[in-house]
Image 1 (cartoon, rainbow over the protein chains, first blue to last red):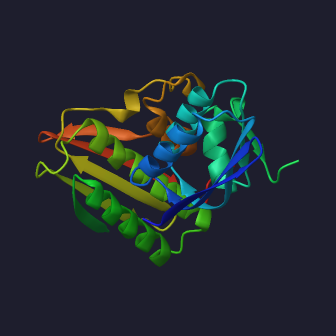
Image 2 (cartoon, rainbow over the protein chains, first blue to last red):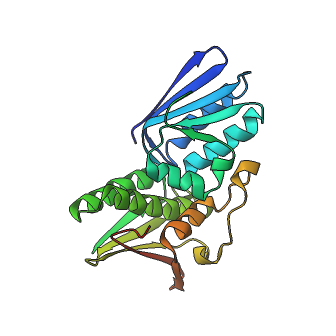
Length: 105
Length: 135
């Protein structure tokens, strides 16, 4: 499965750029990255989803764990997810824990 | 109708995705429908991999895809312990770290009913959905 992750750290914001397909076979890669970045002190954790084509419940579980690990002081922002991905985030109720936006303000 | 026997393993999941996307393209599904079909198939098979069959234990999962002109029928057959996905309740709160059942909850929310029967010692899970997803 085609899936890539790369990190960008600027000041107190960590951005995780995602591309490809996030499913049960690729979620462990994201999980290990998020496990690491949520240990660092940051104000914002941004997941750039503009290039993410697909996400299943395995991706939702990664986001939920990141939310738990980062704590309530860290704002998690999902940038540019496609409508189908927004649908499952909302259906799962995870939009209560993260911010969905098209670009950073 | 197309039937595919998959090994109960990560390789089986990759084969499933290839099969579903090929079917979606050949039957002219929209991008949205293709996403929904893939999500449904992956969540059902993923649930079997996580909770049912032991990986690489030689178990096979059969996936049947059928184009019924105005509807698509997906059947997944596996030989793990009896499990009725249509009986699950609402999902635990993800934001509180409870993630069990969220995949099947998504399917029920997006498609509606999940059919289930236990036949000849195997689970048979059936999902039907319209080509045009109702808003």
